[in-house]
Amino acid sequence: MIPDQQLSSVVVDAPFIGGAALPARDITDYEMGGIAIQDPSEGLDYQIWRARILNDGTEIVLDAREVDAYTIITGTDITEVSLAFDQNMYPVIAYVESGTAKLYWFDSSIGSLTTTTWPGIVTPRLTLDDTRPLQSSISDVIFAYLSGGDLCYRQQRDRYQTEYLLQENVNSDGLIKVGMNRKFRLQFLLKP
Image (cartoon, rainbow, N blue to C red; front, side):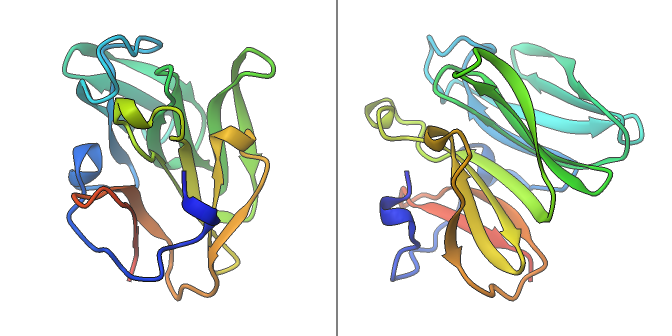
């Protein structure tokens, strides 16, 4: 949850923690998660999961220390991927396919996984904003991106339907990653 849908008035910069602490690239992303898909029984900080684009941009593959690699999305010309998990350990995957941003997520209103297309946004990035058990009632999957040069986000509790403006004219080519930092603040890392 981002309080009042706005950035802090004071920058609270610190190193990232969890999966966000690992190097991010457009074709590989890391996120903390549970023991297995749809199994949060061991908590959401159980292991680091990885999403990768393979086979010349035709597959997104997930794996973790205790989970063999498997293909979760197929497509053509997939160039970016970002990974998160919701509180029920459903995967949420933001990706860019043929230049268009897409979001693969569990929509509770229809009871299944779905893909939503988001034309006009760049560098879609994801994180579960707080994986700590005591924060589960207020945590959200945050879907952050740039739109028209502005830093914006959408959140799971709104079913990603409402866009929130965080900062206008960020003077960046896009997001590198978003995640929790060591001071337990949600942090956005922009490209120079």
